[in-house]
Image 1 (tube, rainbow, N blue to C red):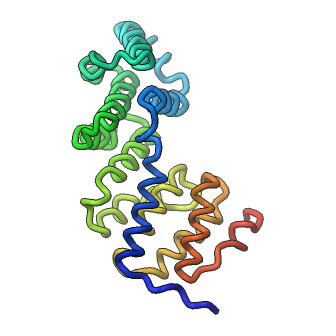
Image 2 (image 1 turned 135 degrees about the horizontal axis):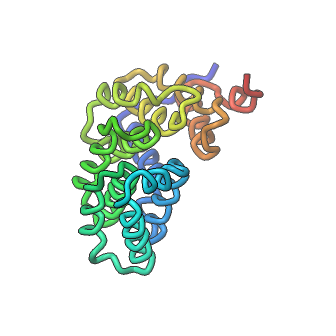
Image 3 (image 1 turned 90 degrees about the vertical axis):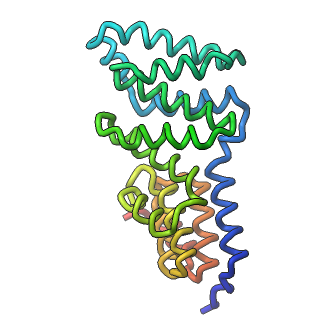
Length: 232
């Protein structure tokens, strides 16, 4: 069996750079496109929750309209007043409106290179037990992406543990960050097994699975046959 290549600091840095480049690619896209992507993601996750909320709370109807106006302004390139309006909407009693405003505010902050504010917004969402788990999980993923360079490997692993499991919606992203943290700890065998598991999980996006096959192979684990095998 072929031996895995020497895993030095340069290799680890390359892995980290590739991970960040792929996972954070959307952050470098055109401003309007990034915001629209964030909104689509939020609406896809929430379904009819905003509608239900505005039926329950009279004021939320107006706030949903205000939120729609903010999105319209952003799409039109008028972003000057967006941060202030989003900050106000983030105080809403409607959890749906508040979450939408915070997600969008974080996206605006990233675009403006204010990563400290973006991280704080994602952390706020992730720690809000009143919000659905879907919102909290994706906020935790994004928070960890932004903080990755400043976190110790064991902290990344602990934080991602509930999400870095086959079948979990965010297994691909959480698993990759966990694997890189394992490499930093010198646990290359465990990292290779994580990449192999990602490659096998057909619910993970194809791009992440393809990258995981390559990474698993570089760590001495042949994941190509595992990835092509029918799901059990």
